[in-house]
Length: 256
Image (cartoon, rainbow, N blue to C red; front, top):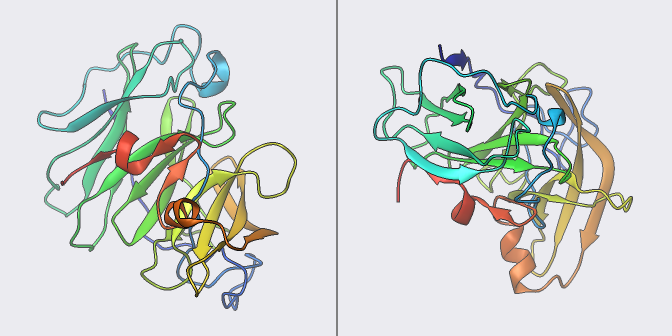
């Protein structure tokens, strides 16, 4: 049977340094909205093996598959059986306004979650590997923010911030961030999930790393400013990307 996980519709704290931080544990966060960042991207072919949340045989098959009419696209090998899997999102909302999305693996497993939002624009999801070495996330956008999920042990799990709300990135709607991406913020040679904020003059951006710990995430105190970044990099900082993947080219959406 299909595994459905509830979505906690709370916006996480903002990521970018300089935002107000009057609510506790996130060092660079605002209490009710999240920031985002975007520039570099993640590998489109993560390694096989059990680290992706399954086994060499893949996740166990379930009874249900991809809903009729859902938008679909081949995605990363999320369960480590060295076979490409499929990300998808339902074409229309349920009665409560939520939109079902999920991943169906080559082994026949379908795992899902619900994206709830009052935004009037299309919903989109992107399955990505933050580090390029099997740290899998699902980025779910409603055009205003990007809600963060982890893919682990053949499940899609909403990631919470230190305040117990679902972690989210701002897409310019609240002013705390403009995009989300995967790039090496701390200089250790490994990509970080990061929130991006384009500078006021539009010539550069600031990236703030997010610390991922299973189903929890928090803003780090490590950020990187890039001045005179160039038009392509600034545009990426207003987008949803991870490694070589972009929401536009590699994600799925409910609308045009």
